Image (tube, rainbow, N blue to C red):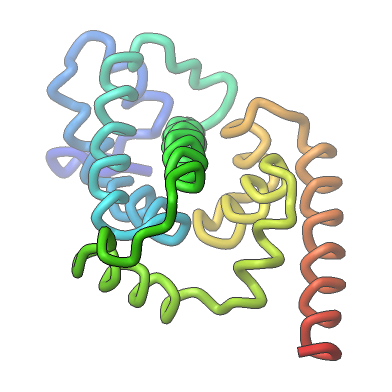
Length: 190
């Protein structure tokens, strides 16, 4: 339930009213901003998370008339936008890194900001877990992080990714097995 002006409003009721009164979208934003931001920040960094979270809500506002409350609630619908924007960001980032890899390395070219960002990122990420997450397929990684960081249920993950609940379970099972095997391998050899 969402409370609006002292009145409890179901998500389905809110979604239906959004079509007639777009100003109500502030209720959606206020209710879910923190969840979406924390999910994105957990997958990327906080500075990029602010931009992607804002873009998530902009897309959701623009597409609010397409929301179908029969398919589920607003929360996984928003997480679906966020997950797609993260994937788009990562594709851009990969293209950027591939382009940089084609350049001759020149340590003088690395700026102070790059070194600080690299240092902070390295400290924040546990190397074994980062390596294990990188070894997952994008589908496995998305499902795992929607559950772990977004705290979505299997049904909500299915809605966010446009897949069946059974597929969510399969992806999570494979992801957990791969992570367990890779971390154990690192602990034995590392």
